[in-house]
Structure formats: structure tokens, C-alpha cells
Amino acid sequence: MSLPTVTRRDFLKVGAAGASALAAAGLGFDVALAESTKVKQQLRIAGAKELHSVCPYCAVGCSLVAYTRQKSDGSVQLLQIEGDPDSPVNEGRLCPKGATAMQLAVSPRRVESPQYRAPGATGWKSVSWDFVLDKIAQNVKSSRDATFVTTDGNGNTVNRTEGIAFAGGAAFSSEEGYFATKLMRSLGLVHLEQQARV
Amino acid sequence: MSVAAAGTAAASDVWTERRRRVRELRSHHGFARQLLDFYGSLLGVQEKAFDDAAASRPTAEKLCAYVAELVVPSVIDVSVAAGPDSMRHELIRRLEGTNPQAIVQTWIDGEDQPAVDRFLARAALGPVLEALGAEARAVCAGPRDALHCPHCGGPPQLSYFAPGPEDLATGPRYLVCARCGAGWGFARMTCAACGEDRSAKLTIFSEHGTTSGEHGSVVRGLQRVVPAHDPGAVFPHLRIEACESCRGYLLSIDLAADPGAVAVVDELAAIPLDLYARERGFTKITPNLMGF
View 1 (tube, rainbow over the protein chains, first blue to last red):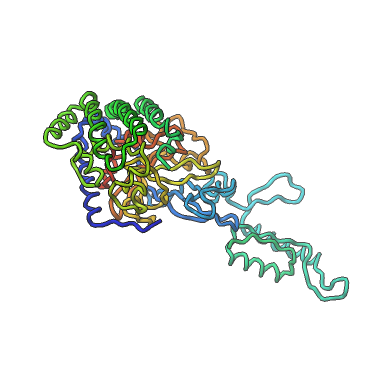
View 2: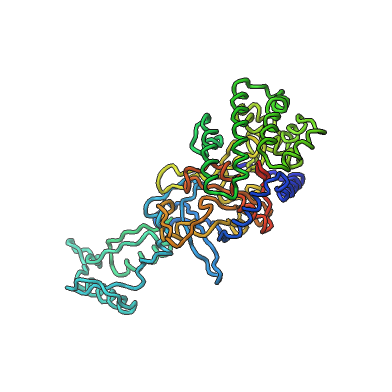
């Protein structure tokens, strides 16, 4: 895109054109003007902003346009997400998962608490974060203790945990991915998979 | 890309498409009927001017004289016959003391002029420039930068979002020239008047219920489900793109939201949105053919 050249003269011309528009009734469409004024008063219009964002789901980094509106209580409401047609990365396209990126922020079906299915149970139940963190810690400890390998078949010291695997989500930032890897390595895990972002 | 692409029509179908859209909007938008009826009459004259210019192909040097002598009289005739009273009176008054060629030349030169002169020049020159293409457009004055038509240097009249190339894809934005009707690609989140691209300075005014999130959908473009108690938007595919930096605005037409829309016609009929923007102190980059 070449740089715009808005001169003082152009600016004044735009202003003059605007002044002419104010006198639009001068062309004589009085009936249309009167009828449109009534319709205008019925319209439910609100101002919104379009913001650039980036899809959180994979390392392609598709550009998004997020359409937001400020509510009367000052909070910002996310109304629509779509691909950014001006991005050289995705040229307006999104994959089916990226196209539903709004669900990450707004979804009436979002699960809001940890779910736990006890051994032998047929259904899930909502539990507290304290419960589930304790449960994970207990399971990690017992699995690690049961499957910890100190030496391999050749007698080499390896000190690894083969009974646990870790998969990092694509919504991880690089820092989160780094931290998760560090933690899992400290437990002796060797089966690690990440889809951390660039 | 010519504005023909905005309505998915080939060049020869542009006029058929515009007439179809006038009929459709006339039945939906009673408030704009006076304007659309007149525009419908004018389209007949403009289509003939388009066909004649395409057949006779006047040279760029003779463009102004050709339009003034062969097209302006027809525009005056239809305006006097089908236009509102004050337009008729104003046209007659202006033509008594003004040379039509000077009126057309002023528009070609991009100078400011009275509203009725601008209407006359635009209505007559527009279809001829659409028919003749690059050589004729090149004689028009104006900067050739991102904010003006790359073909004739005219200012943008409107913008539209083209349908995406596939499902889940958002189409690019185009500006449409007020003088020759050509379109050119333009960044979506940028003011078409001053080039402002900070989101905080750009406000979009649209009716409630026109975004996917307001219909419980997370994917843009899915079938809208309008609740029974919701009267629905009057302009579900239109929005005002306003800039806080220069206080300019224009209307955008989303052709993905209404594939039947024809950008230049829908923009003319959206008078309530123009009134809304004006009420908030914004000035349209360029008034449209009918002065709104």
C-alpha cells in the first residue's frame, strides 16, 4: 500500500463535500429523508471495535479479527471472530477448530469445574480443584513408583518413568511449554509431546 | 476488479443486477422508495450511455464533450420527468447560465461543485467511464494512492466485503470509486479517508443482532437463527465504518451476509445509516450519487 497523500486541499474538499451532504435534501428527496429519519430513530445501533488477534490453537498462527462491543456496565463483549483477510498467513481462512475460537472465551456449554469419574463409575461428576489436584498428585506418585526404571538392560543408570506420558496443548505459550517440560523431566518422564506455539 | 464483481455479475449484467436490486430494496425499504424509483428510471439512461460509449468508444480527449453533448441531455430529461420537484427546478436554473461541459469537467477535475451539478456530472460520466476503461479513466484528476481509485484518482464511495473463497474464509475488502465505479483492494481495519489504522480510533456502527455471537453461534456465516420476538435488523449486512481521527465515515456492505446485495444500490438506499452517522458528527468521505 502506498502512503496516503492527504493534503490540506483534500481535507478542505472533504469538508466541503460533507457540507454539501448536509444539504442533501437540496436534491429534493424530501419524502425519503423524512421517512428515513423515522426509521433511523427505530434502529438499535451500537458502536463496536475490530481488533487483531492470533488463533491460539496451533503453530501456524492464523490472524483473527475479533469483533467486540462495550456494554453499558463497561465490560467488553466478544461478538464474533473470523479470519483476517489481510493476513499473509491465512488470507482470511480458518480451520474448523480456529473458526470456533470464540468458544474458548464464550460458550454456554463450557465445563466450568473439573470432572471426575471414579474407578467403576459410569458417569462424571463435578469436583473441586483441591480434590483433583490431590488426586493427580497421588496418581502420579503411585504410577511413578510402580514404573520407575533406575537402570536399563545394559546396566546403564537411566532413572526414568515409563508409566506416564505427557501431552501439552497447543494453547500453551512457549513459556508454559518450557515449564511443563521442565516439570515432567524432573519426574523422569521420557514420553513428552508438545504443540507449543511459536 | 470492477464493481460488477461486487454483485457477482458479468459486465453485461451489471445493469440487470442493479435493476433487480432496486426492485428488491423498493419492496423492503419503503422509506427509500422515492429515491429508488428515481434511480430505477435513471438506470435506463445510464445503461444506454454505457452501451453507446462501449460501441462508439470516444477518445479520452473528447470524453468531456462526448458526455456533455450525448449523455447529459438524457440525464436532464429523466431527472425533469421523474426527479423530485426541487431537483427539476434547480437543474433548469443551473443550466440557464452554465455550460454542461464545464459541469462535467469540474467533476473530472475533482473540484467541489454544487450538489445538483455534481449529481448531473456523476450520473452522466459514471456509465461512460465504466464502459471505456483505463484510457478514459486516466484523464481524470486525483492522486493515485491507496486512498483513491488507482484508475481515475476518485475518492471511495463505499466499501464491500467480498464473499470468501470457501467456507470458513473471510473475503477481502474493496473500496469502490465514486467517479468511475472501479474497485480496489484495501485493508479491512483502516480508515479509507485518512489511513488511520489504530483500532481504538475506528468505530463500527451496526445494528444489534448482526453478529454471529448474538445468535448463539460461534462460527461466522452459519445460518442465522433470529428469535421469533426479534424484529431483526433493517440493514443486517451494512455497517458504518467511522474514524475518530478524521471524523470521516463510509458504509460497508457485507456480500457474504447478503449475496443478493449490489453494493452501489444498497448504499444508496441506506439513508437511515447516513443520518445516524451524521447525527454523531461524522462526515461521509464522499456523498453518493443522490447526495446522501
